[in-house]
Length: 318
Image 1 (spheres, rainbow, N blue to C red):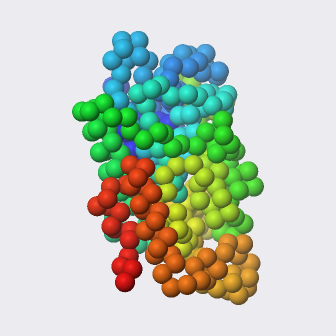
Image 2: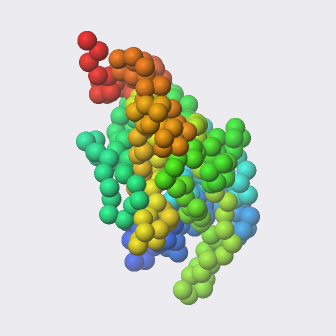
């Protein structure tokens, strides 16, 4: 069950290996693990001519494991996750039958279960407190059933070029709202062909990368949405950008963002905010609580949330 791994490998089976290495927009882009292959099926790299895939050996031997992979939205911006489901020309790929893929919509790389949105030292916007635990726990139960009983897990929920839920990383292509005072990233981490035969290794041509398409609130169209994201009170993103003095405008490490909705229509119009206000969305007391409870139960039916975890999202309705 690889979690938040994007389209990279771990730097392990090498002399002087350092398994903690992870490529980012401005870090560790030349280490092993940042290079082709980026996906499970065996494909040919258009830049190097190599033919490979994460499962090349086990596909040949007929002994591949069952895989349930989960990624946050951040992995599409920092960890080339789109290359998991596209070839090196940007065309949609089909996964082997032993692989399920899930985008945990609008989550940052990692948040504690009790996290609160707060300002990180180098980031421009408050962080994203949404936690992946409930979704991953449900998928762990699904994995257990798949292994022990042969019960198929839920179908993949991951963006794709084939249905236009994976798009070029530009605000108008993504559909992300134009929020006053909140900048969309001007660029994202883009892997390149690594020339490992040179010393030091050098970068060659770049691979195409894409990000999840969103709705007018900035929510990913594909993936698994937590109940509080399905019935939102803010725009949550997996990415954040750096503030002045720290590489302004560049991606801010593993951090996401949270930008609350205005309380009233008058407030949002005053702030030039295109997103509907809380009062416009939930005009009556209890509207949001009831909608969250409904969304939680739908996820339970879809086997993407455990009944015990559903209770974490449902406020007292009496």
